[in-house]
Image (cartoon, rainbow, N blue to C red):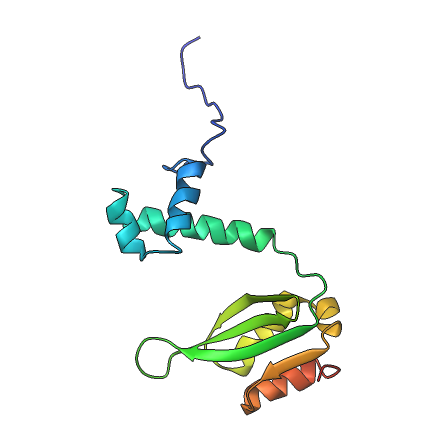
Amino acid sequence: DCGIHVERMPWVKGKHRLTESYAWFLAGWAKRLSWKEVGEAFHTTWYHVFCSVEMAVSWGREHMDLSGIEAIGVDEIQWQRGHHYLTLVYQIDASCRRLLWIGKNRKVKTLLGFFRWFGKERTEDLQYICSDMWKPYLKVIAKKAGGAL
């Protein structure tokens, strides 16, 4: 019977043009070099490197263990020119230091987004929160994690 046959290829996901192992390879190099340099070095496009990094980050977010976090740090960094900020939340427990979350802007709404993502139950387990004395952050921390120091 002639016609269209669809068959699953275990090394490719969906309609992606890169194999999974090649995407992981590119994502690994993207930690060491700029995405443009990775594309040039391995004869692919910036967009394919971007898609590979996006795949790796999505996988990491889905498999991230958020249990047992007792201490977080909240800070912001400026990006681009002018007043463009990113809010960063880190786990700062003695046994583990890692970036947990990045939000665009430096507003009450931004940090509320972290606590919404983090969840009420995990927030109640927080013992310590380290932050600068910026009032919008302090307001959100007092509202959402008042039991933490």
